[in-house]
Image (tube, rainbow, N blue to C red):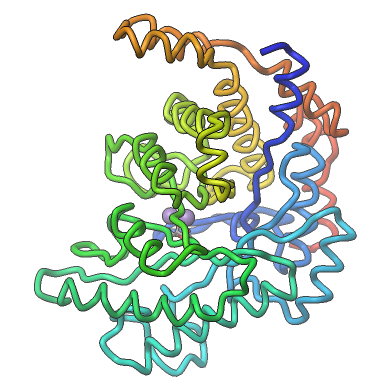
Length: 390
Ligand code: RM4
Ligand code: MN
Ligand code: MN
């Protein structure tokens, strides 16, 4: 691929930012707030606009409800537009009890044995859709903490059937131009049996619900050594790959910066995505192949703005390297079973320094060559600490 073509392709990537990633995160042991962190959704949007000014590739924000529930969604949409931002998928939250909530989610939400609890969780998801409509969002992401921590606690099949029934009701409320994503996760907070624990379950849900339902792959939601690129390839083949939550992990759902621990894995995931994107057969048979890219991390010790900039760059890097793979050569080596040359073809792309291409894409979008340095020079956080008084 020529440099201009590579730059053009590379500049097509867009990644959504999580509203829940702008305040300093914490663990169950503690949280160490930083001066100048945002307190309201308006302030989080200001920070998102700063990230987008630095990266040029992060123009949308994904909202978590009720954490970032807007009082006036229409006004928030206007505020975002003024900052050059729009809204990505809506995220529902039935994994925590909120003040004043009638029924508790202690023993589940969409899978609960009590119809009243399920109804409350269904209504919450429908409310997320309603807010999302006013914001211009086009998708709902459902991650469920539902499950059991001890053998015998839940009837495994019935818990799944109830979840499916609940999801059907949410699906009914989905506008025709929306998509619903279900996110799998093997464990935590349930430590024995999670209802949507793997991509197989997520795929069953998508197939049961209908053509607007897709699976979302959160890179941190896999057991150690899971071959995530295989999961991606299978979901593409099933025409049900909806999108990603990017992050990285060493042990489990660590929510570390994308590309910080296993950059080769991130590249291999993008290798599958680019391969499908360039495959005319896939484009013809699966016109709905439009994965949504999003970051889902917890910024416990880094400045969240720096972490989001850094992660966006690493995702962009992995994608651009995947564009470099000589696909004709790879196909040839696979065909003749030349293992070494096939692997070398991937490694050649992976080992190419694409930093100049990334910088060129940013330059064309009016973003700085070195986003972290530019952000630090801007004195943004210090100014915000003064302005926000924290
Ligand atoms: C979960 C999952 C969801 C996210 C919550 C905060 O582990 O990754 O996507 O919404 O965390
Ligand atoms: Mn996630
Ligand atoms: Mn997670």
